[in-house]
Image (cartoon, rainbow, N blue to C red):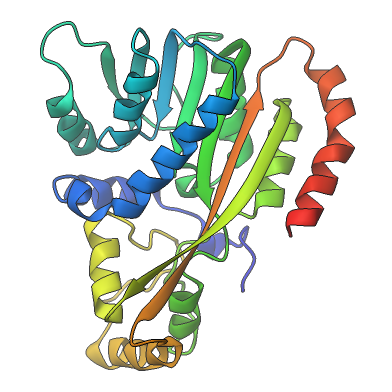
Amino acid sequence: MKKYNSNQYTKNLNHARTSFEKAAFKYDKYSILQRTIAERLDESLGQIKINPITILDLGSGTGHGSQILHKRFRNSHIYQIDLSENMLKVSKKKSPFFFSKDHFVCADINKLPFKENYFDLIFSSLALQWCNNLDTVFREVKNLLKNDGVFLFSSFGPDSLKELRDCWSSVDDYVHINAFVDMHDIADALMRVGLASPVLNMEEIILTYHECRQLMKELKYIGAHNINNGRRKTLTGKKRLNKVFKCYESYRTNNVLPVTYEVVYGHAWQSSNTKKEQSIKLDELKKQLKNKS
């Protein structure tokens, strides 16, 4: 696998915005995995003692994460921020017409339009993999959190879609699958910016499909297009696609095709005593991540 920081894996945010704008009105029908991961991320809040008044849903999409957060924190004001206006439009239709505590902001995740120390909780489910520089995003998160505020997130790890990636690599040398960041690299970035007491874990989820074509259509319908600079700039011909489909058949088991997703879950704190807490937790965290490798 080529290195994540290679120039050809740099994400084109304009292309990402266009993909999600097109996918917004079909997204809820096909985003079963994304909803499941958001719900599992929400479950972890049961382990965290927090009663937030202000919440930022970072990369909110069509608002499923915000909906489940409202059920848990009924008095909270939730700010949904997304790169796609259409995603926010879909989400807004689900929000109460009167006395809504939802706020909708279309903005770049790298330049968030809020004042410092404003949020008690920043929630982000499956948005980080669309970012080119985690340090930049995590600094924004750290600046926006109040003291003792928590950052809760999920992201896809590098083994996600590994079967499809391997099949494309047998066809040509272009980048066809978005690169995903390893759990260890996420942990390093959290500590570099000074977010305290990070805890991360990983889960492997395997979905099954009858056809590879079905998988590709679903990825298209949720806006998960290839947005890397190293992608092929011309249309992919039928011959190449058929080679990918043929290669994928080698993975068929019990008459279905497996699709692997590596999901990283984590949380970290904004603390006025960050340096002290990091010095205590660093060795413990590295040992934890080593054991999970």
